Image 1 (cartoon, rainbow, N blue to C red):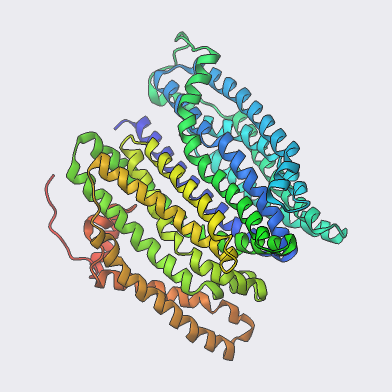
Image 2 (tube, rainbow, N blue to C red):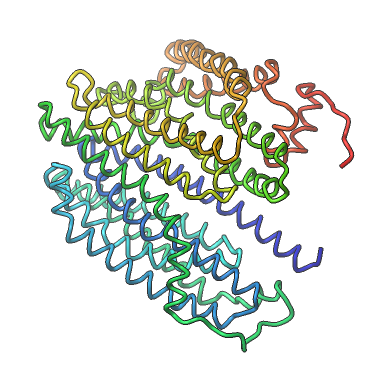
Length: 557
């Protein structure tokens, strides 16, 4: 392999690590933000904040999910051909397009805020929506720049800008909320002030990307694809560039935007149906704020653990598919489903049995924590099916069946909307229908994906191996966590009463250690499964030294 190719590969993996760490940092900061923010805003104020964020997330997904990917693919293709003039034109055309999309999205969110307020049936929520609206313009400009950098396999600017956004949202959001409270502003305006932290944080990330673009030297990257760039190559028209961009971006955007759109519609239905069965607007605001902030935020964390696994599996799946090696494809799919079960089943069951101490540790004691705990206890079971949804979608995408997950998501969205209307409208269930609906939605999408996998790939998973074997260790793990918590809670109450709310931390650590050994005791993991993980060979050698994995003779290729 040439020196330039080595540099390219090194830069790519460095970028992936930076992006992964950046995403993890953003998730952690998002959780950290909501803990003190909920203290300042209360559950009612968090409902204003969460509603505005959901609308932003939907419009943000439409504006930015597929387009940056399309830009990066077009830039990468231009680099491979040495067509640097076209790359400059692609960046110019897409930048203008993104600015227009950002302006339109901002206008829709800002001027449409009263309409969104009427849809949610929560008075004064428009102010928070308007505070977030300018963010769409800033994020669209940032997305054009991120797509450009990613086309050069330079992920670092994207990761750094995401960290700047997260820190801005955390620090400025809390400072602005505190200032509004000092000024005696009403709760809905305090939430709007806090939302300004998100807007300014995104603006700061955009400014960083603009500076990074000014000092970026693309010729250092272009040399990896050949001797010199060819300035004489033909350049496509602006209309052709936009057409190509949309052809690539629209399927990706539709697939992603359906999920965020469904979440927004789900929240609107949740609010309206709770009021339909007799709850006042004030009570509904508190109930939704409590559910979205405490239960949903925590349930969204474990599925992020699957992202690195998906990233490692996709190239293996694509290579097996390209070579026509069906046996290898089946092994990879079975092993990846098994690893998903091993990671997510204990997370789901453990979070379910420890819902109350986890929420108490993070958000404090009180009525709202007691209300959120049973909601999280049910909702946490969606963690497993949500991860199955992600991994099965990756299977289909690796086999050039990108539209099939979109069909599954649409079916799941319809089921979820209908179920929300029906279940939340039952007075005895009320808001407890929401986590049941969440489980039902991801379950339906996962089953649809499995149907497409069987129909188009002829693959039927070994459900005994991927579900039955990890289930026993996961149950042992969750029971260990529960009994350990009770022991540590008693010890902390007697000897460390000031930090007794943190008794759940050592309980989780004990459960993790027990689970690690029980997994190998049950022989749930094989060598071929471990090899799919990042640094699989090193992990196998380590497990062999610990006598948890049998040494196997190497087979010549």
